Amino acid sequence: MPACRVRAGRPPLPRALALLLAVASLPVFAAPAPGVAAPDPGAPLPYVVGLHEAYLTPAYWAARLPDADAVILDRARIAAQNARMRAEDDAIHDLRALPAQLPRAQVAAAIQALSAWPGKPVFGQDGQPIAAAQRAQAVANLALAAIPAQRPLRYGLVTHRAALRAFPTRLRVFTTQGDTDIDRFQESALFPGDAVAVLHESADGEWLFVTSERYSAWMEKRFVGIGDAATVLGYGQRGPYRVITGATAFTAYTPEEPRVSRLQLDMGVRLPVLADWPQDKTVNGQQAHAGYVLQLPVREADGQLALVPALLPRSQDSAADYLPLTPRTLLTQAFKFLGERYGWGHDYDTRDCSGFVSEIYRSVGVLMPRNTSAQAVSPALDRIAFDPADPKTRRSTAVTQLQVGDLVYIPGHVMMAIGHVEGRTWVIHDTAGGSWAGPDGTRVQAHLNGVSVTPLEPMMASDTVSYIDRITNIQRLRAKTPE
Image (cartoon, rainbow, N blue to C red):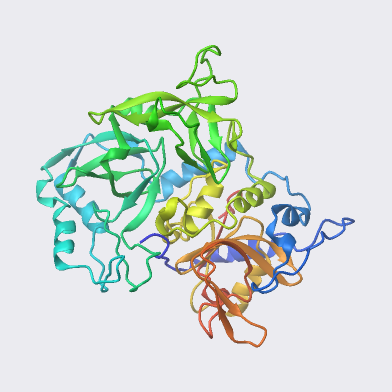
């Protein structure tokens, strides 16, 4: 399931030693630049331990850096990093490399790897156990027996923000009776313009099993326009573009073309612009001078793909290209999600912890795996791995050396470092829960349930185990550490 599978491991000794030495040599951004007054932390806030008003602004953390606008990786190095990710990380799928046909066994194996019924008892939204008939219907809808011996691939573009599901059903399933936040069939989401390869269709004809660049799962057929490979894989590969730089943006409302009316576009989505659109020609009933004319995919009545114009108002947060990868950018982008409701597997039209960090990095053009389990161990990132037998001092030392944008993984969760203040390391993360040691030493169990700013050191995984004790990996986007 999304954001829950993490494997800890120790790299070979030379690599581990090199990484440990690299960490020790990194600058610590714990204080403002010399000669610059420390920014005012503002009034203390209740509840979250150590939190002050100013900590909830990206400007506060940027002001503490010696050079918040230093470029971490330029465009050429980001392109090289993404090429490395596609070449080295098995969680990333190259749709262009797929054969024209897939054998039945390969398609069935891909579906069965995902569509496994939970081993624990599961409940519906009404709190009642999922009935045997409901389970049987969901399993039958997989239509595994209908997979042909050789499955010709089809390609499509996603036309609307769409859920990726473990089974071809809208049935919401929960492992905790009465807790309807974490739907165990919710895997992730795809966004307008995402390319997919179609591997299979459900028995009821309403769902497609698709492979996208970062995930394979079931999605509703009504959100995919089927086209030829050249059109689908070539979509948006040439500029000019608009990159969504807000947490979300929306196309203009249009009754003339409801398929692209008030369409949600999430951070990092990059869409082609029709730059030569005549200024005197309206777009879906509206003159275009106050917006950008996007070319968006839609699904026709016969299921085929079409590309139509749509307006993105200039008031919506977007840019002509990916943002520069700097500490200030990472802070600014992360804080645009502050207070957003936690959405397991991109549920609720929001995102979860791994979706949160990957979309921050997507706004600067960096490709990352979808889930924490894959992000944490990606061989394409500059990884510092921790073994359960490592002494606590090794984790604690690494925490004191965290830099803005570093990603800290514990089983099932990821946090982004934002800075250090008075001996505490602070993170921003999208979390369903959260707990910390209170002033009297007892654990305060919170229900943060959204994007929150917290200190790392007091955070507790249980009454006796801290988050720091459970760190499995730290990943950072920097020039690769030499082997």
